Length: 157
Image (cartoon, rainbow, N blue to C red; front, side, top):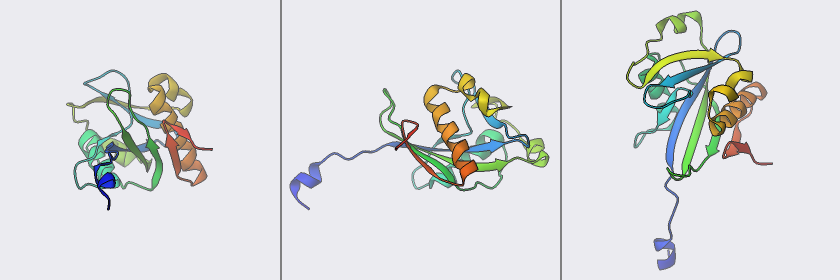
């Protein structure tokens, strides 16, 4: 390796992972954080040494108090934030929550104050645009059995 290669800056994105859950009618589960306005999907930043799927499972357990199986990767999104820098965000398929799983939801009350299911056609009204694009792409990836790679929530064509 040359000296110029050693001193070259490399991206060090903040990485986060979440899971997309559905009810039996196909609505998406969203959570409302207590520390900021708006809705999100269950998830959060990864810990050192943690894989994206492990982070998604941990965040779901912390926020919702449940441990349903986390399925396949739906979306990987390179989404730099104007003030927070580079981000790499993963969304996994949490599947359809059965009535038994729904009955076990126990919100942490610290980070998450409430949850609700919303139709896919209502997502834009509840999510910030960059997250709405990511969740729409994840819903499409789920129905087409694909995995989407996005940049700022937009698929590359």
